Length: 98
Image 1 (tube, rainbow, N blue to C red):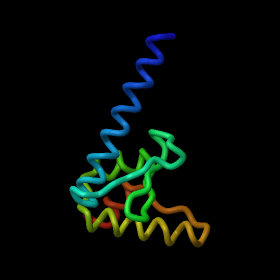
Image 2: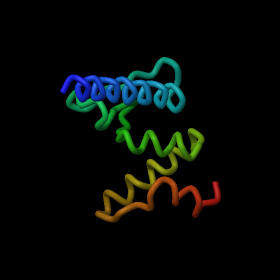
Image 3: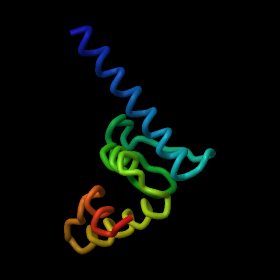
Image 4: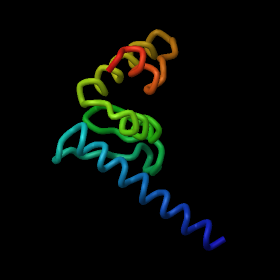
């Protein structure tokens, strides 16, 4: 049980480190983020924008620029407001040749 607890603590540290680096890259050195409901590994709020841990991973993994990340964010938000499902981050980049 101790090993599982240690693994979860490491996962939280890595998740928080990813959120920190993500916000530094896309929002600047002075940016601050908050885990919604203090759930590390869930969703962060930064600059009135919301990102899941998976979103942060995918934007980083697929090397989105700041401009392209915000373009996708706006696209996904618009789709969501229409109760429509957006194309995922990986495929949106491929379809838009970016």
